[in-house]
Length: 186
Image (cartoon, rainbow, N blue to C red; front, side):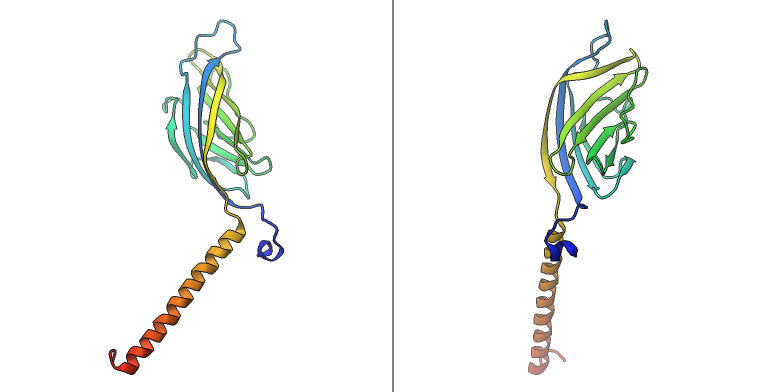
């Protein structure tokens, strides 16, 4: 309500984000590492979350439309850090760090400015079979949709529905009174 009266936007909002990326030309910093087993990696995600609070290791609020890594090895979740406005999309789902390391099958991606101007910050995966972490040389991403309704929009929408309901109710009463007077309704 303060945002309506004062005209200042509130920080909290429901964020709906559709995000696609393709990472390719993977390399490893390890000398003599085998070539990357998955290259390119294409991912398509949809997120729905409230940016007013942290979210830890969740699958609720995330839809994976496409994931270019084997689901048997990587089971991604997401977390959101409200202070930094960052989404961590990883199989460990801890917003404090990616946690991918040598000897584990892990995937990690961070999306900064998630509720304003999303961009990929970190992206890599590791493979336990060969003990290597792979980083992409090329990452192409696009924000398919970002919708963050302000509180003023929600208030106007509710007022509009209330006005429509009031008008419908008024006309319904007038019609019922007319029908009673004319004798069409007993």
